[in-house]
Image 1: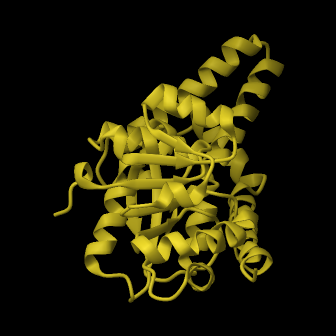
Image 2 (image 1 turned 180 degrees about the vertical axis):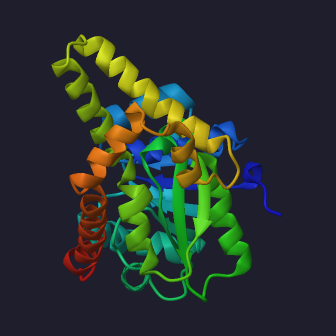
Amino acid sequence: MQELKHLRVALIGGGNMGRGLVGGLIARGLPAAQITVADLNETGLAALARDYGVATSRDNLTAVQGADVVVLAVKPQQMAPVVAALRPGIAASRPLLVSVAAGIRAQDLSRWAGPGVAIVRAMPNRPALVGAGASGLYADAAVSPAQRELAALVLAATGLCVWVETEEQLDVVTALSGSGPAYFFRLAELMAEAATAQGLSPQTARALAAQTLAGSGQLVAAEQDADLARMRAEVTSKGGTTEAALATFAARGLPETVSAAMDAAALRSRELADLFGKG
């Protein structure tokens, strides 16, 4: 069993996902001195150094020197030039590469990084910032069991991790949990707007909507293998207010709308691979 405290981790990209990983890794026991974050945003790097005490660099090659794991946390359109520029450093230290970019395929990452590099793709989500994330992971047959364990060890610092069997399934993960927080935020936003239209103050409506969102998530998380349909039924009294609202959702086509939205997000993930995976 590998331990975090012995790893050296480099993060290429210090945005929200990078910050979530830094906080999670340190909370799980990885010394801050063994984390290096590289980014061009000096303000963001200064904040990470101040808040967590990690090493920072504006030079990606410097950041990956001696790293056991390199997390690629840059946008899909930036991935080709970033990884190609890292190739000499990757060849020297042979780290495990973990990409958290939507869409970009492992074969393209391998082409840019060089032959024989172990690559794991992961799709985390925004709640990683508070240690409540959900990540889908994929590795092909070239990644060893020990390397899979290493990738899961790093990503588990941000929350739940699950492995998928095929790389194509990561497009579905992207549509479900990767983009999913925005769906819930939008629903809560709409609920607050409707409550305001019915007479509540905007502040009260927002506070109640936000806490309902947070509390419902905690309730689900508290149950192992939670049965969502059962939990919904337990809140839905026969002839009551919840039943009236859910019936309206059904009549207005919410199931079809959600299915179409998921299809659109998964399709866009595949399109990102075609757009930015050929550099």
